[in-house]
Image 1: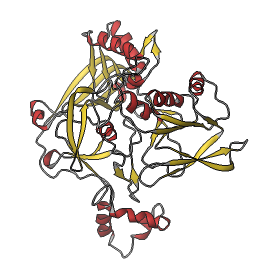
Image 2 (image 1 turned 90 degrees about the vertical axis):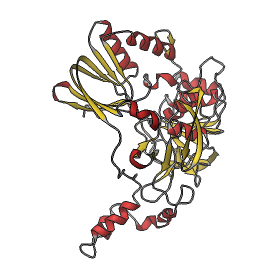
Image 3 (image 1 turned 180 degrees about the vertical axis):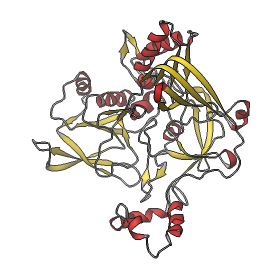
Image 4 (image 1 turned 90 degrees about the horizontal axis):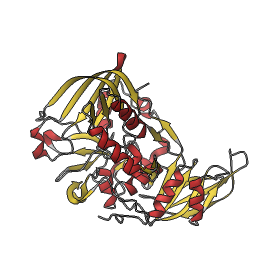
Length: 435
Protein backbone atom coordinates (compact mmCIF):
# COMPACT_ATOMS: atom_id res chain seq x y z
CA UNK A 1 0.00 0.00 0.00
CA UNK A 2 1.34 3.43 -0.95
CA UNK A 3 0.16 6.87 0.09
CA UNK A 4 1.21 10.39 -0.83
CA UNK A 5 3.29 12.54 1.49
CA UNK A 6 1.34 13.93 4.43
CA UNK A 7 1.78 17.60 3.52
CA UNK A 8 2.41 19.65 0.41
CA UNK A 9 4.66 22.67 0.19
CA UNK A 10 1.79 25.11 0.76
CA UNK A 11 0.81 23.39 4.01
CA UNK A 12 -2.34 21.73 2.67
CA UNK A 13 -2.63 18.44 4.53
CA UNK A 14 -3.39 15.34 2.48
CA UNK A 15 -5.39 12.39 3.71
CA UNK A 16 -7.81 14.32 5.90
CA UNK A 17 -10.39 11.54 5.83
CA UNK A 18 -8.06 8.75 6.97
CA UNK A 19 -6.42 8.04 10.31
CA UNK A 20 -2.96 6.65 9.57
CA UNK A 21 -2.55 5.72 13.24
CA UNK A 22 -5.25 3.05 12.84
CA UNK A 23 -4.38 0.57 10.08
CA UNK A 24 -7.08 -1.82 8.93
CA UNK A 25 -6.87 -4.98 6.85
CA UNK A 26 -9.66 -6.69 4.93
CA UNK A 27 -9.95 -9.16 2.07
CA UNK A 28 -10.92 -8.57 -1.53
CA UNK A 29 -11.56 -11.76 -3.50
CA UNK A 30 -9.56 -13.62 -0.86
CA UNK A 31 -6.53 -11.33 -1.02
CA UNK A 32 -5.53 -9.18 1.96
CA UNK A 33 -5.85 -5.43 1.38
CA UNK A 34 -4.42 -2.88 3.81
CA UNK A 35 -5.96 0.50 4.52
CA UNK A 36 -6.67 2.99 7.28
CA UNK A 37 -9.64 4.00 9.36
CA UNK A 38 -11.74 6.31 7.21
CA UNK A 39 -10.90 4.61 3.92
CA UNK A 40 -13.68 3.49 1.64
CA UNK A 41 -13.43 0.18 -0.19
CA UNK A 42 -12.63 2.11 -3.36
CA UNK A 43 -9.89 4.30 -1.86
CA UNK A 44 -8.23 1.32 -0.18
CA UNK A 45 -8.25 -0.73 -3.39
CA UNK A 46 -6.81 2.17 -5.38
CA UNK A 47 -4.10 2.71 -2.75
CA UNK A 48 -3.12 -0.94 -3.14
CA UNK A 49 -2.87 -0.69 -6.91
CA UNK A 50 -6.10 -2.56 -7.65
CA UNK A 51 -7.42 -0.98 -10.84
CA UNK A 52 -9.87 -3.58 -12.20
CA UNK A 53 -12.68 -3.85 -9.66
CA UNK A 54 -15.46 -5.41 -11.72
CA UNK A 55 -16.81 -6.35 -15.13
CA UNK A 56 -19.46 -4.75 -17.30
CA UNK A 57 -22.97 -6.19 -17.34
CA UNK A 58 -23.17 -7.36 -20.95
CA UNK A 59 -19.75 -7.84 -22.51
CA UNK A 60 -17.83 -8.29 -19.23
CA UNK A 61 -15.34 -5.59 -20.11
CA UNK A 62 -12.96 -4.60 -17.27
CA UNK A 63 -14.28 -1.81 -15.07
CA UNK A 64 -12.46 0.58 -12.73
CA UNK A 65 -13.49 3.23 -10.22
CA UNK A 66 -15.03 6.23 -11.98
CA UNK A 67 -16.31 8.51 -9.21
CA UNK A 68 -16.12 8.94 -5.45
CA UNK A 69 -19.74 9.08 -4.29
CA UNK A 70 -23.27 7.93 -4.94
CA UNK A 71 -22.89 8.53 -8.69
CA UNK A 72 -20.39 5.64 -8.99
CA UNK A 73 -21.64 3.02 -11.51
CA UNK A 74 -18.80 0.47 -11.42
CA UNK A 75 -17.54 -0.13 -7.88
CA UNK A 76 -20.30 -2.47 -6.71
CA UNK A 77 -19.34 -5.33 -4.40
CA UNK A 78 -20.68 -8.24 -2.39
CA UNK A 79 -19.85 -7.54 1.27
CA UNK A 80 -19.65 -10.18 4.01
CA UNK A 81 -20.99 -13.73 3.96
CA UNK A 82 -23.91 -15.84 5.17
CA UNK A 83 -26.71 -13.98 6.93
CA UNK A 84 -24.68 -10.76 6.98
CA UNK A 85 -24.01 -10.62 3.24
CA UNK A 86 -25.11 -7.49 1.37
CA UNK A 87 -25.20 -7.36 -2.45
CA UNK A 88 -24.31 -4.44 -4.70
CA UNK A 89 -22.63 -2.31 -2.03
CA UNK A 90 -21.25 0.90 -3.54
CA UNK A 91 -17.55 0.85 -2.72
CA UNK A 92 -17.09 4.60 -2.99
CA UNK A 93 -19.29 5.09 0.08
CA UNK A 94 -18.81 1.90 2.13
CA UNK A 95 -16.15 2.33 4.82
CA UNK A 96 -13.73 -0.48 5.52
CA UNK A 97 -13.40 -2.18 8.89
CA UNK A 98 -11.15 -4.88 10.31
CA UNK A 99 -11.60 -8.32 8.69
CA UNK A 100 -14.25 -7.09 6.28
CA UNK A 101 -14.94 -9.59 3.47
CA UNK A 102 -15.41 -8.01 0.03
CA UNK A 103 -15.93 -9.85 -3.23
CA UNK A 104 -16.24 -8.68 -6.82
CA UNK A 105 -19.38 -9.42 -8.80
CA UNK A 106 -20.07 -10.31 -12.43
CA UNK A 107 -16.79 -12.16 -12.96
CA UNK A 108 -16.15 -15.90 -13.11
CA UNK A 109 -13.92 -17.59 -12.19
CA UNK A 110 -11.99 -14.39 -11.39
CA UNK A 111 -11.69 -10.71 -12.26
CA UNK A 112 -8.45 -11.30 -14.13
CA UNK A 113 -9.74 -14.26 -16.13
CA UNK A 114 -13.47 -13.89 -16.75
CA UNK A 115 -14.81 -16.55 -19.09
CA UNK A 116 -17.88 -14.50 -19.98
CA UNK A 117 -15.67 -11.77 -21.45
CA UNK A 118 -15.86 -13.88 -24.62
CA UNK A 119 -19.19 -12.11 -25.21
CA UNK A 120 -17.19 -9.08 -26.26
CA UNK A 121 -16.01 -10.95 -29.36
CA UNK A 122 -19.62 -11.15 -30.52
CA UNK A 123 -20.59 -7.56 -29.73
CA UNK A 124 -21.82 -6.88 -33.27
CA UNK A 125 -24.21 -9.81 -32.98
CA UNK A 126 -25.63 -8.69 -29.59
CA UNK A 127 -27.35 -5.31 -30.14
CA UNK A 128 -29.49 -3.60 -27.53
CA UNK A 129 -32.69 -5.51 -26.84
CA UNK A 130 -31.52 -8.71 -28.51
CA UNK A 131 -32.66 -10.68 -25.44
CA UNK A 132 -36.31 -9.92 -26.07
CA UNK A 133 -36.07 -10.49 -29.82
CA UNK A 134 -34.02 -13.69 -29.65
CA UNK A 135 -35.26 -15.60 -26.63
CA UNK A 136 -38.97 -15.65 -27.48
CA UNK A 137 -38.72 -18.98 -29.27
CA UNK A 138 -39.64 -21.69 -28.69
CA UNK A 139 -42.76 -20.62 -26.84
CA UNK A 140 -42.83 -20.88 -23.05
CA UNK A 141 -39.02 -21.16 -22.83
CA UNK A 142 -38.51 -17.65 -21.50
CA UNK A 143 -38.41 -18.86 -17.88
CA UNK A 144 -35.46 -21.08 -18.74
CA UNK A 145 -33.67 -18.29 -20.62
CA UNK A 146 -34.36 -15.85 -17.81
CA UNK A 147 -32.61 -18.08 -15.29
CA UNK A 148 -29.47 -18.29 -17.45
CA UNK A 149 -29.45 -14.56 -18.22
CA UNK A 150 -29.89 -13.73 -14.53
CA UNK A 151 -26.85 -15.84 -13.66
CA UNK A 152 -24.75 -13.77 -16.07
CA UNK A 153 -26.30 -10.41 -15.30
CA UNK A 154 -23.69 -9.06 -12.93
CA UNK A 155 -25.86 -8.48 -9.87
CA UNK A 156 -24.93 -9.56 -6.37
CA UNK A 157 -26.42 -12.47 -4.42
CA UNK A 158 -29.19 -11.87 -1.89
CA UNK A 159 -28.86 -13.52 1.54
CA UNK A 160 -30.92 -16.65 2.07
CA UNK A 161 -30.50 -16.84 5.87
CA UNK A 162 -32.53 -14.90 8.41
CA UNK A 163 -31.18 -11.42 9.12
CA UNK A 164 -29.65 -11.49 12.64
CA UNK A 165 -29.65 -7.69 12.97
CA UNK A 166 -32.48 -5.38 14.00
CA UNK A 167 -33.78 -2.05 12.78
CA UNK A 168 -35.55 0.83 14.47
CA UNK A 169 -37.57 3.90 13.53
CA UNK A 170 -38.13 7.33 15.01
CA UNK A 171 -40.61 10.15 14.41
CA UNK A 172 -39.35 13.71 14.63
CA UNK A 173 -40.43 17.32 14.02
CA UNK A 174 -38.23 20.27 13.18
CA UNK A 175 -38.38 23.83 11.87
CA UNK A 176 -35.81 23.18 9.13
CA UNK A 177 -34.48 20.02 7.57
CA UNK A 178 -31.36 20.38 5.42
CA UNK A 179 -30.40 17.59 3.00
CA UNK A 180 -26.71 17.83 2.18
CA UNK A 181 -23.78 19.25 4.14
CA UNK A 182 -21.76 21.09 1.54
CA UNK A 183 -21.12 24.80 1.89
CA UNK A 184 -24.74 25.69 1.05
CA UNK A 185 -26.24 23.13 3.45
CA UNK A 186 -23.93 24.10 6.30
CA UNK A 187 -24.68 27.82 5.87
CA UNK A 188 -28.42 27.11 5.85
CA UNK A 189 -28.17 25.04 9.04
CA UNK A 190 -25.87 27.58 10.71
CA UNK A 191 -28.11 30.54 9.91
CA UNK A 192 -31.24 28.77 11.14
CA UNK A 193 -29.47 27.40 14.19
CA UNK A 194 -28.25 30.85 15.22
CA UNK A 195 -31.83 32.09 14.94
CA UNK A 196 -32.98 29.44 17.41
CA UNK A 197 -34.76 27.17 14.94
CA UNK A 198 -34.87 23.40 15.45
CA UNK A 199 -32.61 22.06 12.71
CA UNK A 200 -31.83 18.58 11.37
CA UNK A 201 -28.88 18.37 8.96
CA UNK A 202 -28.52 15.03 7.15
CA UNK A 203 -25.76 13.86 4.84
CA UNK A 204 -25.20 10.41 3.37
CA UNK A 205 -21.41 10.53 3.71
CA UNK A 206 -19.45 9.53 6.80
CA UNK A 207 -18.08 13.06 7.20
CA UNK A 208 -19.71 16.42 6.70
CA UNK A 209 -18.61 19.07 4.25
CA UNK A 210 -19.12 17.61 0.80
CA UNK A 211 -16.18 18.61 -1.39
CA UNK A 212 -14.91 21.22 1.05
CA UNK A 213 -12.45 18.74 2.55
CA UNK A 214 -10.63 18.32 -0.78
CA UNK A 215 -10.86 21.99 -1.76
CA UNK A 216 -7.92 24.39 -1.58
CA UNK A 217 -10.10 27.49 -1.83
CA UNK A 218 -10.95 29.85 1.01
CA UNK A 219 -14.23 30.97 2.61
CA UNK A 220 -14.55 34.24 4.52
CA UNK A 221 -10.79 34.70 4.35
CA UNK A 222 -9.80 31.31 5.80
CA UNK A 223 -9.13 27.91 4.24
CA UNK A 224 -12.14 25.77 3.46
CA UNK A 225 -10.90 23.13 5.90
CA UNK A 226 -10.63 25.63 8.80
CA UNK A 227 -14.01 27.13 7.91
CA UNK A 228 -15.55 23.65 7.86
CA UNK A 229 -14.11 22.77 11.27
CA UNK A 230 -15.25 26.06 12.81
CA UNK A 231 -18.74 25.69 11.37
CA UNK A 232 -19.15 22.09 12.55
CA UNK A 233 -17.86 23.00 16.01
CA UNK A 234 -20.46 25.76 16.31
CA UNK A 235 -23.27 23.53 15.00
CA UNK A 236 -22.38 20.69 17.39
CA UNK A 237 -22.53 23.11 20.31
CA UNK A 238 -26.11 24.14 19.49
CA UNK A 239 -28.70 22.14 21.46
CA UNK A 240 -31.33 22.92 18.81
CA UNK A 241 -29.29 21.37 15.96
CA UNK A 242 -29.02 17.66 15.21
CA UNK A 243 -26.34 16.43 12.79
CA UNK A 244 -26.93 13.09 11.03
CA UNK A 245 -24.06 11.60 9.05
CA UNK A 246 -24.27 8.31 7.13
CA UNK A 247 -27.90 9.28 6.63
CA UNK A 248 -29.52 9.23 3.20
CA UNK A 249 -32.55 11.42 2.62
CA UNK A 250 -34.42 9.10 0.26
CA UNK A 251 -37.93 10.56 0.23
CA UNK A 252 -39.34 14.10 0.08
CA UNK A 253 -43.11 13.69 0.37
CA UNK A 254 -46.13 15.98 0.52
CA UNK A 255 -46.32 18.67 3.19
CA UNK A 256 -42.58 18.56 3.92
CA UNK A 257 -42.64 14.98 5.18
CA UNK A 258 -39.10 13.58 4.78
CA UNK A 259 -37.79 10.03 5.21
CA UNK A 260 -34.15 9.34 6.09
CA UNK A 261 -32.22 6.06 6.31
CA UNK A 262 -29.43 6.27 8.88
CA UNK A 263 -26.72 3.59 8.65
CA UNK A 264 -25.71 3.11 12.28
CA UNK A 265 -23.33 0.12 12.28
CA UNK A 266 -22.39 -0.72 8.66
CA UNK A 267 -18.94 0.78 9.27
CA UNK A 268 -18.27 -1.43 12.31
CA UNK A 269 -16.88 -4.98 12.52
CA UNK A 270 -19.53 -7.69 12.80
CA UNK A 271 -18.61 -8.48 16.41
CA UNK A 272 -19.54 -4.93 17.47
CA UNK A 273 -22.85 -4.63 15.64
CA UNK A 274 -25.06 -6.31 18.22
CA UNK A 275 -24.59 -3.34 20.53
CA UNK A 276 -27.12 -1.26 18.60
CA UNK A 277 -29.51 -1.34 15.66
CA UNK A 278 -28.04 -1.57 12.20
CA UNK A 279 -30.25 1.10 10.64
CA UNK A 280 -32.70 3.71 11.82
CA UNK A 281 -35.56 5.10 9.76
CA UNK A 282 -36.27 8.76 10.45
CA UNK A 283 -39.77 10.04 9.65
CA UNK A 284 -39.52 13.80 9.89
CA UNK A 285 -42.17 16.48 9.52
CA UNK A 286 -40.46 19.80 8.82
CA UNK A 287 -41.81 23.34 8.54
CA UNK A 288 -39.23 24.07 5.83
CA UNK A 289 -36.88 21.91 3.79
CA UNK A 290 -33.63 22.95 2.11
CA UNK A 291 -32.31 20.62 -0.58
CA UNK A 292 -28.57 21.25 -0.75
CA UNK A 293 -27.66 18.01 -2.48
CA UNK A 294 -25.00 19.52 -4.71
CA UNK A 295 -24.22 18.38 -8.24
CA UNK A 296 -22.74 15.44 -10.10
CA UNK A 297 -19.89 15.82 -12.55
CA UNK A 298 -20.65 14.66 -16.07
CA UNK A 299 -18.35 12.18 -17.84
CA UNK A 300 -17.36 12.73 -21.47
CA UNK A 301 -18.06 10.15 -24.17
CA UNK A 302 -15.27 8.84 -26.42
CA UNK A 303 -13.93 5.51 -27.60
CA UNK A 304 -13.13 3.11 -24.73
CA UNK A 305 -14.15 5.70 -22.15
CA UNK A 306 -15.00 2.80 -19.83
CA UNK A 307 -11.38 1.64 -19.42
CA UNK A 308 -10.05 1.47 -15.85
CA UNK A 309 -7.98 4.58 -15.30
CA UNK A 310 -10.59 6.90 -16.82
CA UNK A 311 -12.09 8.84 -13.88
CA UNK A 312 -14.06 11.96 -13.11
CA UNK A 313 -11.82 14.94 -12.39
CA UNK A 314 -13.51 15.72 -9.07
CA UNK A 315 -13.01 12.12 -7.95
CA UNK A 316 -9.32 12.31 -8.82
CA UNK A 317 -8.96 15.40 -6.60
CA UNK A 318 -10.88 13.66 -3.81
CA UNK A 319 -8.74 10.51 -3.81
CA UNK A 320 -5.57 12.62 -3.93
CA UNK A 321 -6.51 15.14 -1.25
CA UNK A 322 -8.91 13.28 1.05
CA UNK A 323 -7.28 9.83 0.99
CA UNK A 324 -3.70 10.58 -0.16
CA UNK A 325 -3.93 7.93 -2.89
CA UNK A 326 -1.26 8.11 -5.63
CA UNK A 327 -3.44 7.36 -8.62
CA UNK A 328 -0.88 7.46 -11.41
CA UNK A 329 2.58 8.34 -12.64
CA UNK A 330 1.44 10.29 -15.69
CA UNK A 331 -2.00 11.87 -15.97
CA UNK A 332 -4.01 13.83 -18.52
CA UNK A 333 -7.02 16.07 -17.88
CA UNK A 334 -9.80 16.29 -20.49
CA UNK A 335 -12.46 18.94 -19.87
CA UNK A 336 -14.75 21.65 -21.18
CA UNK A 337 -14.64 23.95 -18.12
CA UNK A 338 -12.20 25.82 -15.89
CA UNK A 339 -12.96 23.75 -12.79
CA UNK A 340 -11.08 20.70 -14.03
CA UNK A 341 -7.87 22.73 -14.17
CA UNK A 342 -7.85 22.51 -10.37
CA UNK A 343 -7.49 18.75 -10.75
CA UNK A 344 -4.42 19.34 -12.93
CA UNK A 345 -2.98 21.51 -10.14
CA UNK A 346 -3.82 18.85 -7.53
CA UNK A 347 -2.07 16.19 -9.60
CA UNK A 348 0.97 18.42 -10.04
CA UNK A 349 1.06 19.23 -6.31
CA UNK A 350 1.03 15.52 -5.55
CA UNK A 351 4.13 14.98 -7.69
CA UNK A 352 2.28 13.31 -10.56
CA UNK A 353 3.32 14.30 -14.06
CA UNK A 354 0.53 16.04 -15.97
CA UNK A 355 1.25 15.35 -19.62
CA UNK A 356 -1.45 17.71 -20.90
CA UNK A 357 -4.76 19.39 -20.28
CA UNK A 358 -7.06 18.90 -23.28
CA UNK A 359 -9.85 21.45 -23.53
CA UNK A 360 -12.74 21.34 -25.97
CA UNK A 361 -12.93 25.14 -25.91
CA UNK A 362 -10.83 27.29 -28.23
CA UNK A 363 -10.21 29.86 -25.50
CA UNK A 364 -9.47 29.38 -21.79
CA UNK A 365 -8.07 32.26 -19.72
CA UNK A 366 -9.27 31.78 -16.13
CA UNK A 367 -7.07 32.12 -13.06
CA UNK A 368 -6.61 28.35 -12.67
CA UNK A 369 -5.84 28.04 -16.37
CA UNK A 370 -3.01 30.54 -15.96
CA UNK A 371 -1.69 28.66 -12.92
CA UNK A 372 -1.57 25.46 -14.96
CA UNK A 373 0.28 27.22 -17.78
CA UNK A 374 2.74 28.71 -15.29
CA UNK A 375 3.80 25.15 -14.42
CA UNK A 376 4.66 24.46 -18.07
CA UNK A 377 1.80 21.99 -18.45
CA UNK A 378 0.77 21.67 -22.08
CA UNK A 379 -2.76 23.06 -22.64
CA UNK A 380 -4.22 21.72 -25.86
CA UNK A 381 -7.27 23.83 -26.76
CA UNK A 382 -9.93 23.16 -29.36
CA UNK A 383 -9.28 19.42 -29.18
CA UNK A 384 -10.91 16.25 -27.92
CA UNK A 385 -9.95 12.77 -26.78
CA UNK A 386 -11.30 10.43 -29.44
CA UNK A 387 -10.13 7.13 -27.95
CA UNK A 388 -8.47 5.62 -24.90
CA UNK A 389 -5.98 2.83 -25.60
CA UNK A 390 -5.34 -0.17 -23.37
CA UNK A 391 -6.65 -3.62 -22.57
CA UNK A 392 -7.13 -3.84 -18.81
CA UNK A 393 -6.04 -0.29 -17.98
CA UNK A 394 -5.52 2.93 -19.89
CA UNK A 395 -2.09 3.19 -21.51
CA UNK A 396 -2.50 6.17 -23.84
CA UNK A 397 -5.06 8.38 -25.55
CA UNK A 398 -5.63 9.66 -29.05
CA UNK A 399 -6.27 13.38 -29.41
CA UNK A 400 -7.68 15.20 -32.43
CA UNK A 401 -8.32 18.86 -33.13
CA UNK A 402 -11.81 20.18 -33.76
CA UNK A 403 -12.75 22.16 -36.84
CA UNK A 404 -13.80 25.81 -36.62
CA UNK A 405 -17.45 24.82 -36.28
CA UNK A 406 -16.56 22.34 -33.46
CA UNK A 407 -18.64 19.68 -35.22
CA UNK A 408 -15.95 17.65 -36.98
CA UNK A 409 -12.40 16.46 -36.35
CA UNK A 410 -9.58 17.90 -38.40
CA UNK A 411 -6.04 16.75 -39.07
CA UNK A 412 -4.30 13.63 -37.81
CA UNK A 413 -4.80 12.29 -34.31
CA UNK A 414 -1.98 12.49 -31.79
CA UNK A 415 -1.14 9.77 -29.26
CA UNK A 416 -0.14 10.72 -25.70
CA UNK A 417 0.88 8.14 -23.11
CA UNK A 418 -0.73 8.19 -19.66
CA UNK A 419 -2.03 5.87 -16.95
CA UNK A 420 -4.81 8.18 -15.75
CA UNK A 421 -7.33 10.31 -17.61
CA UNK A 422 -9.39 12.76 -15.52
CA UNK A 423 -12.49 13.93 -17.36
CA UNK A 424 -14.99 16.69 -16.70
CA UNK A 425 -17.98 17.53 -18.87
CA UNK A 426 -19.40 20.08 -16.44
CA UNK A 427 -21.93 19.54 -13.66
CA UNK A 428 -25.58 18.53 -13.34
CA UNK A 429 -27.51 19.52 -10.20
CA UNK A 430 -28.66 16.56 -8.11
CA UNK A 431 -32.38 17.29 -8.18
CA UNK A 432 -33.60 13.73 -7.55
CA UNK A 433 -35.39 14.54 -4.29
CA UNK A 434 -37.14 17.55 -5.75
CA UNK A 435 -38.13 15.70 -8.91
